[in-house]
Amino acid sequence: MQYKYGNYKANDALPKGQYEVDVLIVGAGFTGLTAAREIMRDTPEKTVMAVDATEIGFGASGRNGGFNMTLFGMEPETTVMRWGKSKTQEAQNYMQQAVAYVHDLVERENLDSDYEHTVMWRVAYSESQEKRLKKTYDLLTSLAKPNSYEFYDQSKVREKLNAPQVRAAIFEPETGILDPCKHVRAIKQLAETAGAKIYENTAVVDIRRDSDGTIVKTNQSTIHAKKLILATNAWSHTLAGPKKIRNRQRPAWTYQIVSEPLTEEEWQTLGWQDRMSIEDNRQFVHYLRITKCGRIAIGGGDIAYEYGKEMDKWHDPKIWQALEDHFHWLFPTLKHKKVHYKWGGVVSANFDMVPEIGFIGDENIIYSSGCIGHGVSLTQLNGRLIADLISGIDSDISKFWIVDRKALPMPPGCWFANRRQAGFGHNFTKQLYYC
Ligand SMILES: Cc1cc2nc3c(=O)[nH]c(=O)nc-3n(C[C@H](O)[C@H](O)[C@H](O)COP(=O)(O)OP(=O)(O)OC[C@H]3O[C@@H](n4cnc5c(N)ncnc54)[C@H](O)[C@@H]3O)c2cc1C
Image (tube, rainbow, N blue to C red):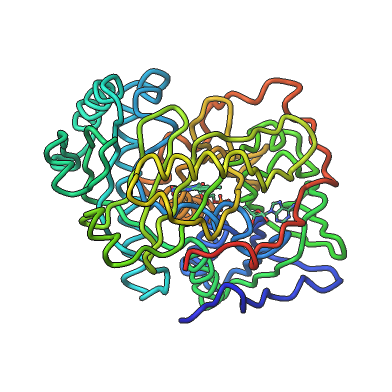
């Protein structure tokens, strides 16, 4: 399968009319598209429709760092503090399954996602960060299967990367990197091949219940759906309809830059072996990775919140500059390298920073939110999990404790979004390039 960012042609919008479906999915990112495909595979006789307000992958799924990683919620320490060790262990296990699910999908279906099953480093720059990193390492090894992590001291770090600021690293062998835009488009094709109908540029503007499911309105049509999946992630508070969905989460914007390609000599000077992805262990993490075409992508640092009405913080020159400064600080030999691409994306942050899959009223409406910046693997396995919930499959993953958990809603005052300003104006395909 070959996709070109610029040449992507979105599906038509849902034509004017009245429709009846078994399952309607609102939001076509990793969660929605994976759920669509998996439901069709479980029950090909069902009618499954997915709609997206813009293009598939317009949300975080098409513009993330592409780390197929195991981190759940914010930090293992905070998850243990809030949920206890046994639930954190269960979450760790789920995330390891999630990484394997994505890896396996790419290999089995031969997806054109630029996937590399590389390793990941979590790094410390200062003495105090190193102490904290060591504690995190001890905690992670007590939670995960044996051999899931190793600790690298400075001499081991130097063997594999010439970045003088990096003092220590947690090494994790079972992770990967992918090109998010290519990957989400590949999943779209899988979902369509399985029989799901996907409509782009089709925004849902109202949701009501009826005696036999839900009545969902788009700008020009009405859909009666027996089951409804709200996979709108960071936009969930903008949905009209049941109040519960609007107080689950708030949007948070995070930014990324991509360098011009490095020369062979520059790569050699860096000595970046194993093509590992890298994340640091600060509060607002920075993450870095190599792209398939030999650039370095770096993201994270400061974020932008929105407590009010807007969904339009796609550009932040100050944060882009801070990312560029960090890039040059980390790799002094690359001070002359220019930034070729920059963009922003929005993640869904809920009050207790742990993802949530829940029901609204009865089990006919399922929603997913709060995947913060760690949703590449999570949301794809969540798509499988949601398919289990729809089909009534009593699987191990469907019992994962984030399902129907008692999540804290956002405090009043944090969810008064103006639905007409849902911020879909950003030009997606012209903006995002890894290669
Ligand atoms: C810059 C950035 C970097 C990240 N890096 C990583 C990473 O390296 N690793 C990692 O694990 N996670 C990362 N994440 C997080 C990860 O990308 C997300 O958790 C995940 O992609 C969320 O997928 P989703 O399908 O749930 O939501 P989304 O992909 O956000 O999809 C939601 C969709 O809903 C649609 N929608 C909204 N409202 C409506 C409506 N009214 N009608 C119809 N459609 C609607 C939107 O258009 C959108 O396409 C990053 C996120 C960002 C923004």
